[in-house]
Length: 232
Image (cartoon, rainbow, N blue to C red; front, side):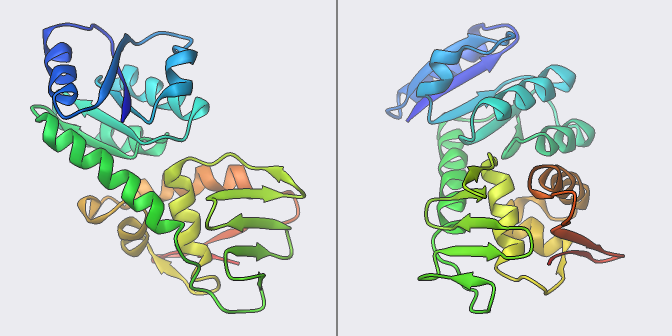
């Protein structure tokens, strides 16, 4: 796996982290946080690690997500719920506090990839909103098309760029269209079991998703007061 490792101040800790990943067979490119991000490295990467706290880490996650949809893991020097929620809200797939071994980083990145593939593996819906062989979900009133196998979303032939987390959340709602889903259920389906109790992550992610897929005439994801969300 080609990994881009971003940090405000590359040093011994970053080099040790990079070396531990290289020992597991990964190719690691280390870079200081900068604006703009290193385009050549981003274009060739399979995953990005941001080793930064606070606003610097959140800004880096936002910039990475604007450029690519690959797995994005944040390594924080300490556990801070506010920072964690902010990083996840702007596109991080996972946040973990240091210290952490190379093997755990490897396992977490592979888990993110596995969840993404699982989300796009099979469409379980069988209703009038579907067309074709079951690999595509069509929201007829808005023209939104979700290609489950290719993990792409489009409208009128124009692609709508989504992050891996955005796509998992959309699939979790679309496969159960018309059936309200609790925040805890969406957390498990889109983020995994490690985020129990962090319902604010879902609220922020739904708001971001609405901004990408809604049209002036059609709102896809509706709030269910005191419970969660439903896709219509």
